[in-house]
Length: 150
Ligand code: IDP
Ligand code: MG
Image (cartoon, rainbow, N blue to C red; front, top):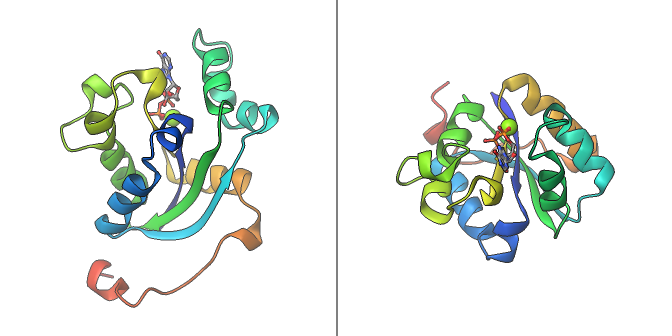
């Protein structure tokens, strides 16, 4: 099982797409283990996007992610990292495959609606950055054996 941080970023919240994102991940079979609706501080934004510091879009990215509340979630599943990034689509919406969230609802890279972790290691690190231990729930879903083969 892998774990990913998922954010519905401020544009997704403002546009009423929180439910759409959750519905797609739920229907895919991924398991929700944590969620909170929150305003992102500059400090958290800088830590989360530290890898992008110095890039031309960095200041705009920090302004974007702190501009309005986000829906922060932790999702689990087998190969959750690849599955969730596939459901989100490519970073640039015009390169995202039809049927993905970024294809279906976005046009510009700086307003691409969602964040998802890009490796199992970052999935654990990012969920630890955004959630306290007691904000994550370990649970068995009744349908797990019908979705998870192992
Ligand atoms: P990802 O969100 O698909 O993992 P990253 O390359 O990690 O993509 O970039 C993080 C976020 O930074 C993107 O989702 C997007 O919002 C923003 N971003 C990336 N590249 C650009 C750019 O060239 N211009 C504006 N924003 C960008
Ligand atoms: Mg990324």
